[in-house]
Length: 117
Image 1: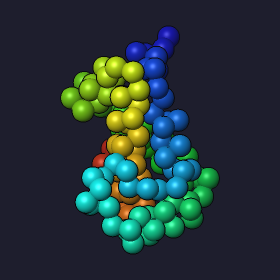
Image 2 (image 1 turned 60 degrees about the vertical axis):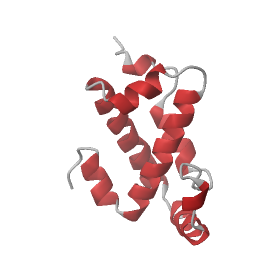
Image 3 (image 1 turned 90 degrees about the vertical axis):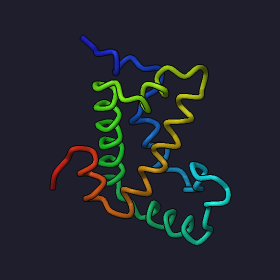
Image 4 (image 1 turned 120 degrees about the vertical axis):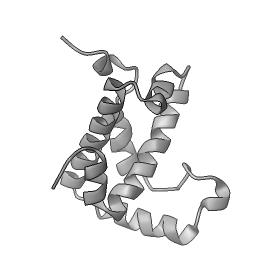
């Protein structure tokens, strides 16, 4: 039997996969905080991701979202309860932010998801 998380209208793994395989543009940041050199650096790191790293990233995002759903974390419940595409778009922003964290320090990101090396 599927849990409510598995019946969400969007799949965090799909959003995370899309983020990891789409050029990074820093749209999750306000325009004043978008450093063109940082965008280029992050996108270069994203392009070097292996299929294994992409899979790891979307599984970690799914774990983070699943845990947030289980504890009814405010930030994730806002995503779940949002009308129309707003929740999905908010999740894209979170996943973009997480992608930067993952690319900058995969071990630290894994630890933030409850995965220890």
